[in-house]
Length: 182
Image (cartoon, rainbow, N blue to C red; front, side, top):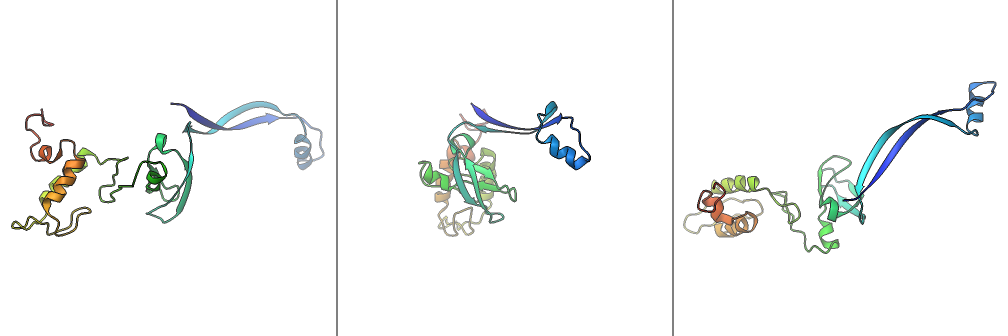
């Protein structure tokens, strides 16, 4: 991958002048050719080469309007607010980049560009198993993530099927033939 690297440097130099005081010496020196004797790098930044676009998002943590130059192809759809340090999901970029509709889920902090980890999904599966459910209707009696009270448990199973590698079967039977424990 190619990067543009910006380097800031502090240079040290000297010039000899004839003056009556310090202020006059500084004024005379500014017009002379300086003999540079040393320098040091004070800052260095690297950005991937590519098309940078102006991105604007409202930080959900501090409510600051953030504008920055960004390339979702090389830098992803997750950034951090320069004001408060909170996470910014660049959801509006899904629409502008031609990647489709944003499917960000605040409860799992995931989307198609920043998938939820399998460890987090296992934890969520365990939490789901502890929630109250009406045994006659199999409808949930408590909310779970973005699912409301009253939803049938199989709707939540379908979600786990979509987001967990191996689906609900692997969550229920992790050591079955072909499971993750083999």
